Length: 256
Image 1 (cartoon, rainbow, N blue to C red):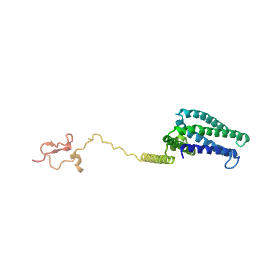
Image 2: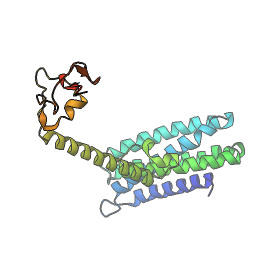
Image 3: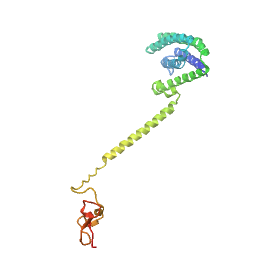
Image 4: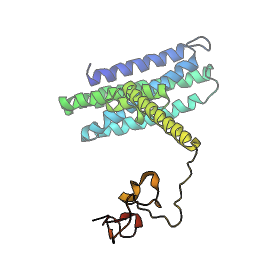
């Protein structure tokens, strides 16, 4: 189905929905108020899809620009009357039905003007490759409108409007949010465990003790720093060269 067939199908569906509103009664599953609300949604969805996907290309040509001006004025009046009827409490009354009948005739006239005027010229103006791009954009706008109503979000935030799958994108976002939440909980649990751990006392060095330990003193074992060497002291004491300030590193030369 090409772009213009899609537009004609939408026109036929909206005109038929207008007839259903007039035939509806006040009770039952298909009451007049519910059908009028459905018509309001479908009409606005069709208008926005055309205005965003089709009208920018038609506004570039002088032959179709004049049609767009007249079409825009009629759509503005249609939207105003739809809002007025939506706010009236006598939806099942005769006066309401008479006013809606006039509105339905205005909608049908706007579609006839579009089909016989701007669409006829557009078939000769727009290139086939551009027409296919417009068809994709028109279809995406309608899908995004349906999903925005389902998710109660703005239509501009729907991924389907930009060619992405809404379910897949929302699934990825949900997965990322779950991973982030799990990481945050893990971090908070680790911080609480660290805060509950008892503090270790800091070891203080005795006053006058040297921070470095020489090799001979470290290997002294149980003798301690005051233990005497195993041979008798005789002769001069020579330094070992290990430590110039530690008396334990100065050993006697021993007997010759």
